[in-house]
Amino acid sequence: MAKLKSLIKIEGTLDGMTFYKGKNGYLVRTKGGISKSRIENDPAFVRTRENGTEFGSIAKSGKLLRQTLTPMLVDIKDPTVTARLMKVMGQVKNTDTSSTRGNRNVATGLATPEGKTSLRGFDFNSGANLNSVLLADYELDLITGAINIPTLLPKQQISAPSGATHVSFTAGVALLNFELNQKELQFSSEINLPLNNTVTTVTAIPPSVPTGSGQTLFLFKMSFYQEINGVQYALNNGAFNVLHILEII
Image 1 (cartoon, rainbow, N blue to C red):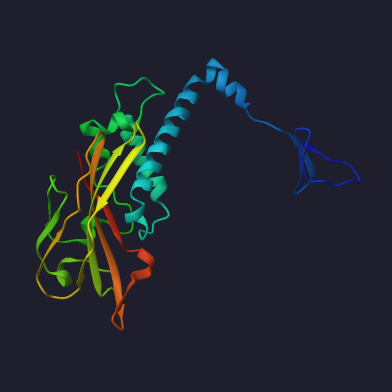
Image 2: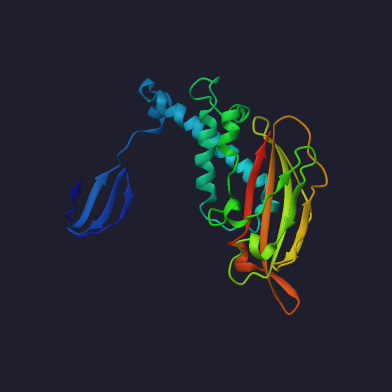
């Protein structure tokens, strides 16, 4: 870094030199860092290239999952979901013990029991964890994707946010093939209930279960609403809504 002595005070980059104003006046420095070509070809950076390839793979897998679930995620508000999902996808990738370093991937990892364990139970809204919101027992049918809550007492067994008057339940089933970049999602219509003291049986059934190669994810969604003059409005734009991965097969 050098101090610029000139009547002409400039800021910006010119011929590989960056001119900028600091607390000690106008300064200049040359462009630093390691060139892209060296990183791509130098044997000393083989680990860097391997890590970069695997990072790109998990980013692509996380994007595929989010795109698949877009219809269910549209009213789930959490700015941290992409970063949190990337972290989990990295854990899934690490369960791939058959691929060489640099080629480990989510598709292979998710085919293992350990990989499924890493992603199972993921909440797409960090501020609305299913096990903290729903205090009743529920059942999942792995054949139909149906979710059943036999005896729900909404007022007592749902930890609803302030202002909520109604809650909806949705069951979803997604089939993803991360290797072939293929996806399919089926989800039920909403089962909407008032948050009162009436015991109710809730059964949400997707229209079908996707078939094909890949992994099948079973999803459970809860959405909260506030009724005003007979019309239900999404509560706080979905900040309290739940979307949870129940199971993976």
